[in-house]
Each structure stands twice: as structure tokens, then as C-alpha cells.
Image (cartoon, rainbow, N blue to C red; front, top):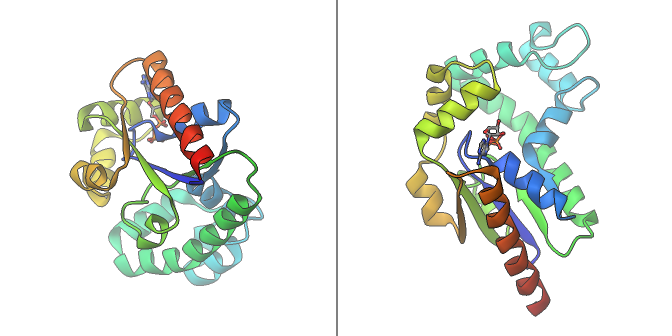
Length: 200
Ligand code: ADP
């Protein structure tokens, strides 16, 4: 048992959870971080993105204009497919590279849309899902970003449902309490994952 998939709807707290595993010296491979690096200044996905979506897809420094791309893919499903066809193979390759070099007893693979993807589901040995009620998730995202609650609801509607995530989960963290409680939940799972690793 080596790769623990970590997922959850937007605002559930999966980044906070992956940070807590990181504090326990567990390597975290984060598909979202990889995706942002690929579309940052000098990101290796940018030449193809500019070629296919035009110069408006990038800022003058060469990083992706997220607002432009977000609006484009929400209004045009074909554009979404084009973007995914550029990004997904690069994200998979880089995540796999990071998994291959990981030295910790097990590795957390954090993917926002893990449930939705047969590829990612088959890449993990066990699946941890972070959950919280939708109203709380919306409140957290509105507080942390400049998105309006309507925009967060729109994102939620594109993600798997809570029932689908719970159905696929081996382990669930209900992130409805304090940070201290969340820390306790992560520590408990960490002990279990270490003991499972030893059995392999
Ligand atoms: P996700 O990665 O699932 O979108 P985050 O981990 O970024 O979610 O959490 C969303 C926001 O909610 C962040 O600002 C985070 O600090 C906050 N948050 C997460 N868990 C808790 C908690 N148990 N108590 C208070 N705030 C929390």
C-alpha cells in the first residue's frame, strides 16, 4: 500500500489535509499544484495553450490568463476538451514522476477530480475523501477567494456529488470541526496508513 488518493469537493479542506500530511513528513503529490506550474510563467503547457487559444490566453509575462480560460471553458465544452487534452497528459506524467521519486512510507496523491477520472482511480491503492456540507464549503471558498457564492455553486455542479465520493471512499474525514479536530483525524489516519504499509 503506497499511494493514498486524496480528494474532496471544492472547499472541503483537502489542501489543508494534504498540508497536515506534509507536516508529518509524508510526501504529497498535488495535481492542482502541478497544473498551476504547467500554466505559470515558462510553464511547459503554455506554448500549446497560446497556439490553440490565441495570445489572449496568456498575460504579457507568459502565464495563463485564468479568467479568460475559465470563461471560455464554461461557455464552450469543446474548448474544455482541447484544454484537457493539453493539460491532462502533462499532469499525469509529472505526478507519476513525483510518485516514482517519493521516499516517504506512503505518498498522498491529491487530485480534485479523482472520482471523475478512471485513470486516477486506478492509480491509487486507497482513497481518502474529505467532506463538509455544501453551505460550509461555499462559505469557506468565498472567504478565501474573490469568487462569489454563485460561482462556487457553479463549480460544485461540475464536480462529483457527495454521494458519489462517499461511495468510492475507503476513508472519510468529516471536516466540520476546528483545525485541531482536523489535525487529530489526520494523525489517526497516518497511524493506520503506516501500519498498513508495514503489512505490505
Ligand atoms: P479545498 O482544497 O478542498 O478547496 P482548503 O483546504 O483550501 O479546501 O480549505 C478551504 C478554506 O477553508 C481554507 O481557507 C481553509 O483554511 C479553510 N478551512 C479548512 N478546514 C477548516 C476548518 N476545519 N476550520 C476552519 N477553516 C477551515
